[in-house]
Image (cartoon, rainbow, N blue to C red; front, side, top):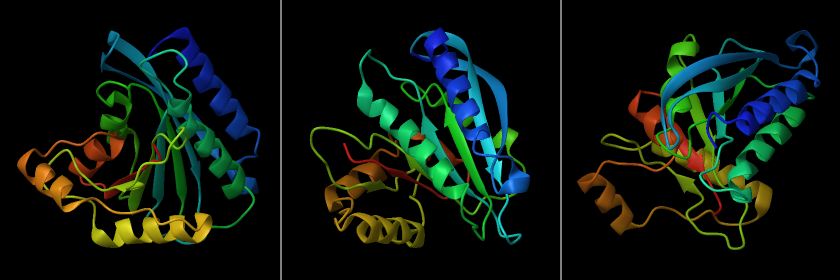
Length: 214
């Protein structure tokens, strides 16, 4: 649950795991924790946002990768799959060079209001190239589309970002990620509301998509 002792313990575990991959000087990450406060499904709560940054080989704007670690119900294993993927990406990125800086973020409050993601912009400096939000990547059945572009405001993530992420999923998994239906797109035009942290990030001006499988 957001702001619980278990939530804080998981944040500490994620921080320790990423720090254990090495410092930025050795191609690892610089890790910091900031505290935010906002309305959650548990009421007003202080929450920890974990930010891990790794420099790129160029000055190009960074890529932001976000996953929330809280869940609305006990035993919601799919909710933790985004965090598991975030840790695996940290391990992979710590061993190879990237042109762009990589910023990995673990937030809380994602199961009700997206508090961590909504306040994230105040802790990051400079423009971001794009954001990829890791949603529920595990489940008994896969449900397309795997890439969700919708914003909490009018519009969606740029088509180039959607296609880039979709092509990467196809290349890595051999599975077509599908795409939003015409009905879904019309519904979003009528009711500009999105499920997922990409919604608040996109609405704040950061091109963002949600990747989920269930």
